[in-house]
Every structure is written in C-alpha cells, then in structure tokens.
Image 1 (spheres, rainbow, N blue to C red):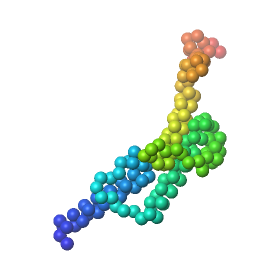
Image 2 (image 1 turned 135 degrees about the vertical axis):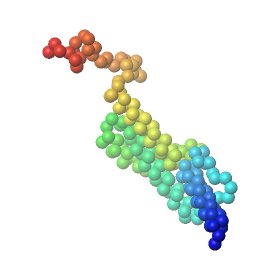
Image 3 (image 1 turned 120 degrees about the horizontal axis):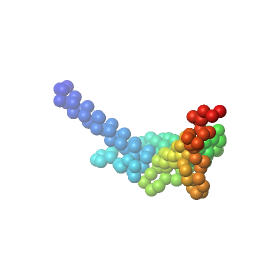
Image 4 (image 1 turned 180 degrees about the vertical axis):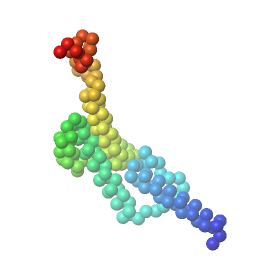
Length: 152
C-alpha cells in the first residue's frame, strides 16, 4: 500500500471519527447547543441512540439535582446533599433544541452561582442587601476597636 493511499485512508478515518463525535455531541446536548454535523452522518444503531439518550438524561438529572440543592442550601453542604438525594429522579426541563443534559448543566451553573454569591457575602459582604438594609460596616481602625487597636 502506498503512502498516499495510507494517508487518504487515515484522513477518511479521522473525518469519520470527527463526524461521529460531532453527532454524539449533538445527540447529548441538542442541536441548539451543538449543531448537527455537515455532510453525511454516520448511522448509529437504535440501541446505541437509546443508550446515549439514557446516559445523557441520567447525567442531566444528577446535575439538575445537585444544582437545585446547592441553590436551595448554598451555605449548608449537608442539607444540599440531602436535598440532592431526594431530587435524583426529577427530570430537568430542557428548552427547545436542548436535552436534559443541557438543562441539568444549566441548573448546576445556577446553583454554583448562588454558592459563589454566598461565599462572597461571607468574604466581602455587600453594603446594601436586597431588602435595602445596610450591612454592618467594618470597624474603622482609626476610631479604635479594630484589629490594629493598641489601647487594650
């Protein structure tokens, strides 16, 4: 077999693998997120499609459960784990052109955003909360009572 023939066969194999992977991404995340591949698509068996859909839906449910639980209890990991266990069978609501995996990933992102807000409120509290109340200001070191107060 000539080197040119080997290169052509290798190139065709890589192209076929790329189209298959792209199609897998479309099937897992939906055509709104990963547009279908251009050109001829590699056919998948019905059993393979069912297995891919089931795996994506299962992971989507797990991500959804984790995200919603973290969002409900951003500063209480124990309560979040308990709630996530109770939510494992909830099916996330995908938007059109998306899949349960995509919806679950979005829910996890929302939960992580709520967690980040909670951590930031502890590390660097906001001055004005949503209720309009002022949070206590940090002590002014020049007025005494702060960490550098030497009056003891």
